[in-house]
Image (cartoon, rainbow, N blue to C red; front, side, top):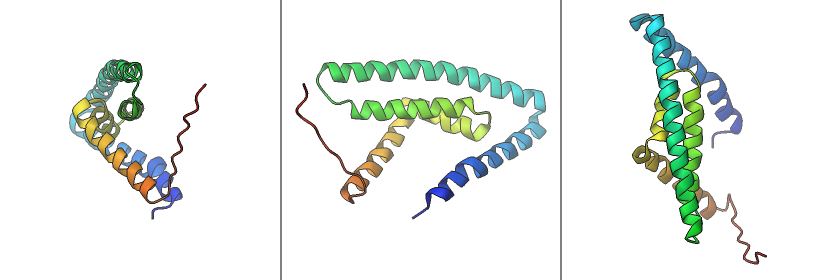
Length: 137
């Protein structure tokens, strides 16, 4: 099993190195100004997409709760919209690809299915416990 240290190490060190490498390589091919323009355009487009998808997911959560359902899938969609939005705020091509993929509903379904599989597996293995409280007042 991968330790938490290695996961954090890869997130905070290896991914930025990859991002810098891609920015330098692509900047060398298309020019620095074009690279900066692409980063600004993707940030603007990402902000618009994050806002629209965020409101869409919020509306779906409200609809599910008004029907009396626990909005589990909708909350996972909201989580991935949030992560995708943060990824788009980070300058870089790799983070933009990941961020945009999390904001496109059809692709986000893949992330949600993977997350549900991980959650289900951890509950079945006893790594996570789930408690339900039914005496609401």
